[in-house]
Image (spheres, rainbow, N blue to C red):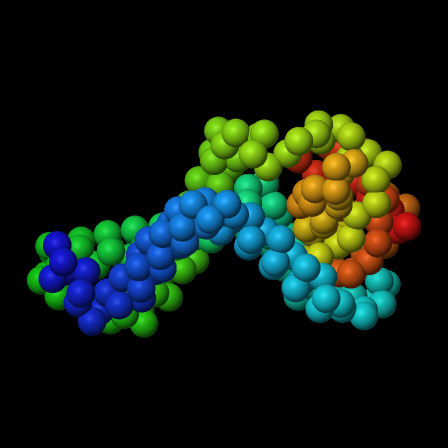
Length: 217
């Protein structure tokens, strides 16, 4: 098994597996020190993204930003902590990649090149990531990430930190509850609103399933 994982054709998937194990180790060490790695990642990454403010005219913005927000929403990013999403991606990528190479070796005793296998596995792992993330979002204890009901988000201010919010294409936003704790939600603009770019302050108007409807502040 170790020899198989160490094959040069498997290095992208072995690296992903190693990184996943490293993240797990960091989480354990962080918990011992009093701060979980997932908490640090959730607090750091969104703030970094929010600083990368995109100055795009809402009426002319299109394409990449809107598609990016749609992809984030489809992958259910924001429904679980960022560290969990990363671990799910690494697990999907490494698992599918090693499985593909093992199958090829059993058939013709020769694995695919690392680059070719990665190009096949990368898009294939995205729907797997979506399914696993949705499953984890339902079973993870909500009191570890939320101290208030999501209904209390209505009327609160938020800032779009990742992607561009358009009708039918959600972006990720951050808001703080009454206890000062940050929450990350997927948002779409109200019907009368045009596209809302990253970095824009918004007001949460209502919740529709897992999506929040917002307008500019």
